[in-house]
Image (cartoon, rainbow, N blue to C red; front, side, top):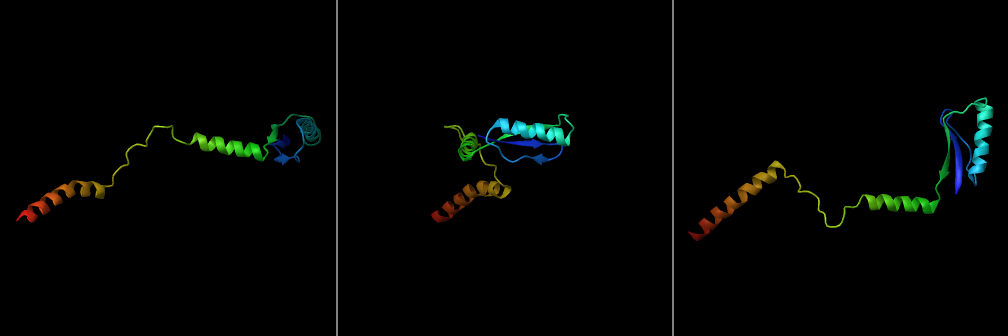
Length: 101
């Protein structure tokens, strides 16, 4: 896995390194040069490879799926749909009566 050193105070980043030990050297060098040996708010971050990114995307996609056997709640009807739902049976009844005569 590759690592990179980042200093949040300076907004500086070191190039990506092959292992954590090389990034620790970047950290010590930056602290000595830019912060006179003091420890700023900094971190060594792993850089995910393509397989790790693929796995993260798969986990995120799986987490957003609904559990099996569940349904979403009922959809809210608009006022026009409510009126149409109430008037449709009345309209069918009137048309049925007119068809008999």
